Image (cartoon, rainbow, N blue to C red; front, side, top):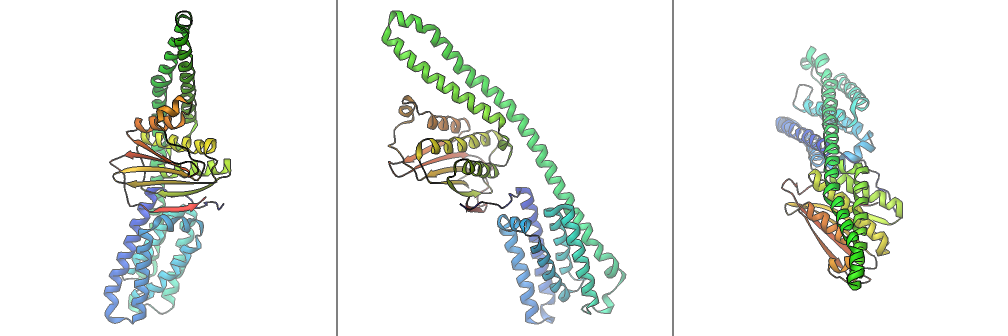
Amino acid sequence: MASFADPMVPARVGAAFRLLMQLRTLTAMVTLVLILPAHPPTAVVLLLSFAALSWIAARHWQLIVPRLLLHPLLVAADVAASFTALRLGGPTGPFFLSTVITAGVAGLLFRWPGMLAISAIQVFWYYLTLAGGHVPAADQTFQALAGQPLYYPLIGFAGVALRKLIDDQAEAESTAAAAEERTWLAREMHDSLAKTLRGIAMATAALPMWAHQDPDRAVKESVRIAADVEVASREARNLINGLRDERITMPLPMAVRAIAESWRDAHGISVRCDIDSGADLPLRARYEAVAICSEALTNVVRHAAATSVDVRLAAERGGVVLTIRDDGEGFELRSLEDLARDGHYGLLGLRERAERAGGAVSLRSEPKAGTTVTVTFPVAGASPGGLRVAEVI
């Protein structure tokens, strides 16, 4: 099993990176229009290639940004290529802005250490361009010699500041989400577990009377009490796990992947993740989705005897769809109520959780053909079209 090692990139960082790459594309195209009459075809090809690569990076940032974080030398190579293009337009041309934008990208992705390193490389390449005779003497003004190189660290600092704002906002939202979630869990404990325990207490108090007056009714009541105790145990376990689980404060794509990786490491079963970066949910629905994902994978271990599992999260049809498919033993489909009467409460719990978030569960299974659990959550804020990254983890 291959390990998925790419870092998860916050959506806001991705959005800022996408905007910067779009600006690079625009400045490259403007430069191309301005130099087109006076430069050879090789220059046109170079600028078109630079614009195309910037556009691809903007469109597929979910793939590009993790690679840049793992291999920072790719940014240094991009800097070298950009200054090759800068020789064509000159330091006073619009393409200079493209090289400055790269400093902002470095600050956004790598913070201070990476930004300072990239800015230093850019200043070096800038003066190398001037010294190479590629810039007319008339253009070598004080602004070109001393002022413009300062833009690299200044814009790099702006990138660092933007990343800090994004991180601070994410931390504040995470703290608020955690406080809200714990408040909700306390209310949930009162509304669900406490009511279940009260029902058990009342049924248990009436049991001696039924044993004396109607033994058959007493047997039925005993079975029902045992089932209610199992439900209470499950509710308590879920609530405790929820209080301990910090993944509910993550964006849903990050949380689902973290659950899959943790489950894979614990049980040694291959997992293939197909994660849509735009498939997120509000806090309360996210809590249910995280719990459903964990419970469904637990059911795979208990009942499926599977060798591999597919976990898919997608934003589609105005909602978010979570699908967990295994290649295990499968079973003959019956109603959830029949399964609960036989002591199989896991699927019933999934349905209850989905309904609490306004969602729905569908189940598909056949003996020896595996099982597929699909949970759909309606959400007005879903953003379909985010790139899905499929990887065996």
